[in-house]
Length: 214
Image (cartoon, one colour):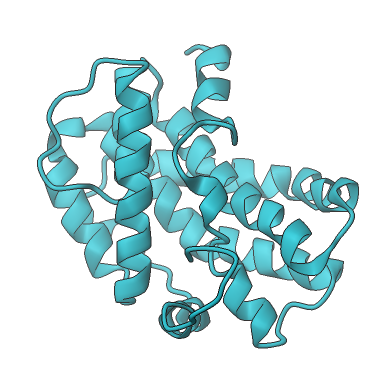
């Protein structure tokens, strides 16, 4: 395992389109559910425990068994009830694969995969293991929304990164759990849901003016 390679994969500056997405935060800010730094922390922690676990588990599974990418993609599709979120995930997966092909040799993927599946395939191609794929996935779930919080709420970026540091042990725990389950059948992988994010995503998709694509 190469720590340097993992850093490349998890780098927020990777041109994979992540900067255009708030991970559902913009809709929650608009609804008044997230107003300040403490609310952002609660949002990030809740997202990590639900969508973060699911994303990490599917990224780890795709890394361990890239040949099952199609089945894993269908499984993740079934766990994403919001059409808007499915569209956003596939857009990010497409962008991630484009970036990945500039760095590593990737086999044909067929249908545009969800972002966690694309991340797992990239991790495998880069010589990383399921745990590293899961860490990158969990890390991305929190950092994307944290970056968006600075713009949406005008928060101190140093304070927001302090939240990420506080969440690091939980991120590691989630990633370790996801990696342990990377051999599980698709139907047995985590399926934790976030109904408010699903509802918010559908409302957000109808806005004429917004800062983020999702």
